[in-house]
Length: 263
Image: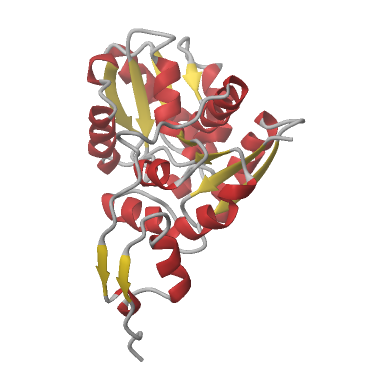
């Protein structure tokens, strides 16, 4: 039976529960899935600092489970550390933003993103540029809400989603992306309020992984995601445990200078 690992790279148990509900609905028999949150790190991911911390914090989980699964879904719309994980893993790794944008351009001329705080606008703009989709991008509109408040204030969240959806339509969006895994429970309610397709990125990421598996496709490791060259690593023991050093050294054959950790 095929098996998926769905990773929430933040440490919010509430958001992990919501992601699990969506993933379990998609990965029905013969599929099974394991849904896990990062073992440590930020409770929500709303900045570059959060993204980079989270990308390192999920590595032990990836190392532990990747040999047991047929693919991994990175369930954060910022796709934090996605290219690192594609480089690191033998199985396909799907970022939910990358997946949902790929679906969106099949459904309309331009897509728009509904995000949390104003800070997220620049993060989304940068990600779209990285994926080379500026010509199909109408922009991002913020809800002016912290992501952990979405479920706490559901009516306010839904009203804000509708309001920002209309702004994106005025900017040329024909397809809407929910720009946070924490919005996965709002997709159906929002779809009743707007006449544009609304894509839940968690569902999109899971569905894309299923499609890749059914097609027998794997990530290419001959170019962008090829294994990095060996690198001399100095004094990793000053910052990391020996187990984490082994994870960081995966597949590289690095020369590692492990100094004792400071007392």
